[in-house]
Image (tube, rainbow, N blue to C red; front, side):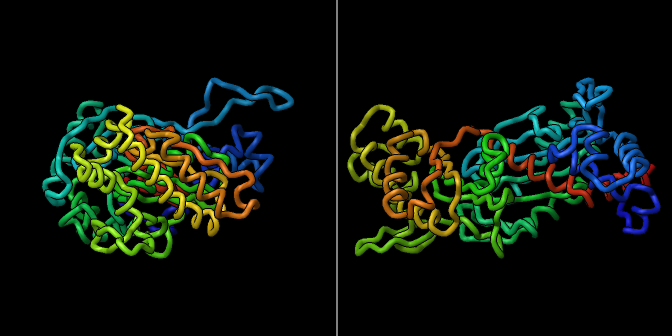
Length: 401
């Protein structure tokens, strides 16, 4: 039930979201902290905390912290306040889950479906799984805070639509949020898979790092960018598309996008598999490439090392432009470890100024196969717990009774 700005003030929820944001950011852990760091009166703090407690969004934990006097009880988000539905859509496999606001997975399912079948059969399957997941954990559709979709394609995040060309044949400009609107009143957020993996990696393992670049080296190549602690999407959501930077080569290979000489056409899993097939090996994708590397086949190891040098070329340009403190390399090919990283490091340290590389860390990802799914859930939580969104959410629930 939508509410206007005047209704938010009339219902007494205005400002509660700001107080919650201070708690979620770690700036304040107790009432005493809120009084110390904010310019709010004690009466205002008490009123806004009351709104948050009454709504169920906030709890006082049994844990206490020293405050110079009587120990203060710690304030924390009630992670059971709502549920998030998330889906990680791969080229041939889909993972769906229901999470709390942690986000922590409450229940999940896997399905083998080809994304190229088009949006309707894929979204129909996802919607059915969401219904069954909710029933399995005993939650209602009106308890859903939002839906998050992790997609292997360029995405117009504001519109929630895939923008081709991509492996998602038939999805271009399909209204994903509109498709779910009949079943869920909550917002539906769609985002590129690499960006969501970047979000998970940053929050879980590098929360203090303000400048980070995540490079996904798998079936395809892409990157996600954290600038000043925030995700950078660019003007239209195309930032980080390093896989389709073209390299100069007299015999440039054809890329899946139709251009010649893209980074992907040299260094992606499908390209390495192509080159291995030309050498007589059975290899269809990045997983097959890694199987050969793990069996110590020198031809596969040599091609992965060369892919690392190609990625190093583009990574050096990224370092020169963005000056990150950390480069994290993930995706299936990252399982090759130093075989891949050595070439990246070689080109970055060779081509970039010492000022840019002096404290630079280049390492492999740690977030694992759940990274995209948890990133989709985290995107929903971050969006729905923005200060103004919290004021509106609580007002809507008060108005609905």
